[in-house]
Image (cartoon, rainbow, N blue to C red; front, side, top):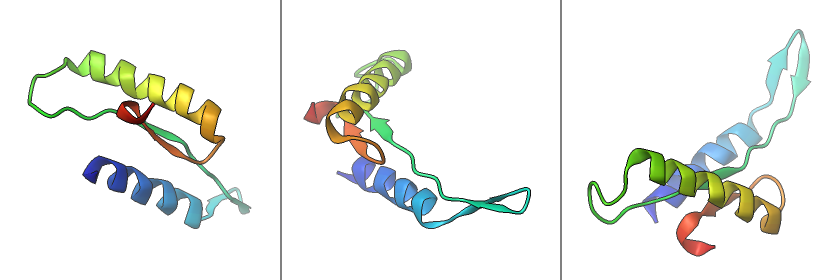
Length: 74
C-alpha cells in the first residue's frame, strides 16, 4: 500500500506542476509500474524491475495513460 501511495504522489506531482521549456509551459503526465516484495531478497532487483515494467505495460493498456499499475493487481 505504501508503494502505491508513493507512486501516486509522484504521479500527481508531475501532473500538477507544469514544466517550463524555452519559455513554453508543458503539461506532462506519467504512468508508473511498481512491484513490491514481502521479504528482503525475495526477488532479485532485475526480476522486480521486469515485473514493474510488465505492470506498466499491461496496466497501462487496461487503464490508459496517467496511471499507476501494481504487478500484484494484474
